[in-house]
Image (tube, rainbow, N blue to C red):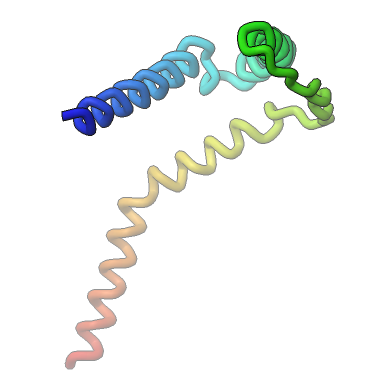
Amino acid sequence: MVPRVWSLMRFLIKGSVAGGAIYLVYDQELLGPSDKSQAVLQKAEEVVPTAVYQFSQYVCEQTGLKLPQLPAPPKFNFHIRDSWNSGIITMMSALSVAPSKAWEYSKEGWDYLKERTK
């Protein structure tokens, strides 16, 4: 009985995390226009290190452990906006032509087999 309950709890936790991630992406419009995505990512760069530091301080107070100070994240001079939408567009165009390409390749293969079996 316990393994089934544990399995169910793991499934519910994973589903909750995945659902929360999907909601966050939708709510923050991360897959929307590139300027909004860039703004959200810049906001995350400012907020996440502070949140991690506060959480580590809380863990230290509660457990008495001494966690080493994390180094500052590296600064990159790369704007995700320059390549984000081009990657999405390339992937979606490949997915949109996949059925017709699959049909085309299977037709070519079928014709090849017909020629070889004559």
